[in-house]
Image (cartoon, rainbow, N blue to C red):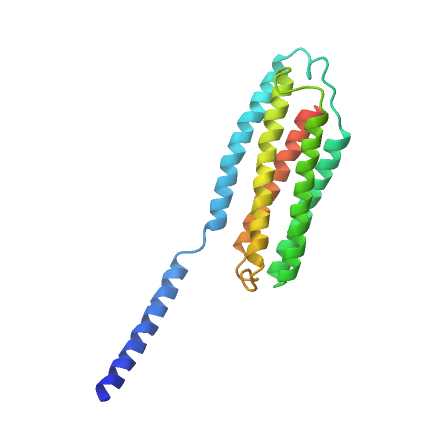
Length: 207
């Protein structure tokens, strides 16, 4: 019995030592996941920068831009722009909620953001259906469809990310004010999508 007691004591000591070592090991390797998201968004920005540059070059080389026969409608894209920009502020409310430990607030504000993103995409589809030019009508039309569709793909992915956060938040305690990487990463990505759309709106609809 004496040996059993000694063995148990030794096992407990070893477990405690391993726990301390594991804790120190974790502290020595800080969480760089947000930095990874930022690097990813910078890479995505380079892709859009190349597309914007090509668009501006085409525009500079053309005598008339947009070409004759192209009429740019501002009402629907303007409403879509307001919805998308507003959704960033809505999502920020959700992130502030979880940082204060309010999981219900996170769910409400992120659900609202997902709905606004879906409305934006529906508005874009409706705009496509009402346009009088197609993908191959002229150079402006090709640029318009490629840029807006590529951005729309990013918005779709953003909505999926938000839905993923909502699904995970259904489990109480998954996100806390100390641990909220998912919502924070989704918000960074959504702000990126918003900024890209503002640039697109200026290039395609105003200039």
